[in-house]
Image (cartoon, rainbow, N blue to C red; front, side, top):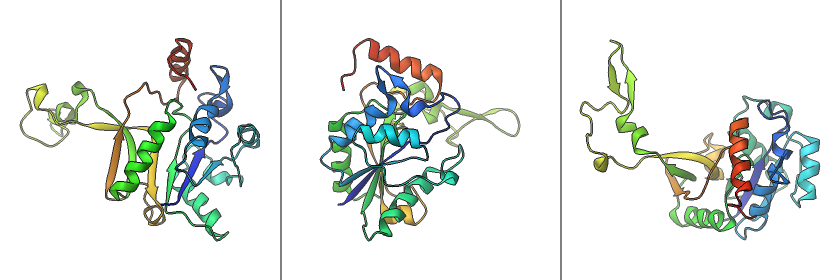
Length: 232
């Protein structure tokens, strides 16, 4: 399976200005994802998708390829990730190069390893799923079978629609949430207008994780690095 690795990193971050190239632990945030992806043996091509010349310049110093400048309409706060991925596939299709799938690696989830990335790609290729995402287990207190919504009569109802509450924690089925670290999707699924398709595989993340969106997230990541828990 021929896979295009894409690291999206737009400029104009409002929560943390210049977030993608801001120094975290003595390295630009983008560095952590770039280093891991560049060491992978399972990506046939790896590119940066960005609208920012400053980010592109930093990325090229790391050895990343940035073959285009992302259009402005795909670099807004509300621009969907699907459009960013479709743009990259279309760029190469116009050059006569096609990929069976893409691997999307967000710079805002910096703490993954090359081994974990390669394991995810291998599982995706082996299962034949439309997509595969990295996930983490939902703590039992937030399991959807224990989550309530407010009904029309202002009484609580189970979010799952069940009439009976599962009373024992041990009987709760496992539930997962996307951690944003790895997304793998077949190109045909993306061209059909979906980032996930119908058959979604998963791989569970076990190590420390932070998805950097706020200053509190940034501080959490910096503290973890200061403690010497991550080597890259």
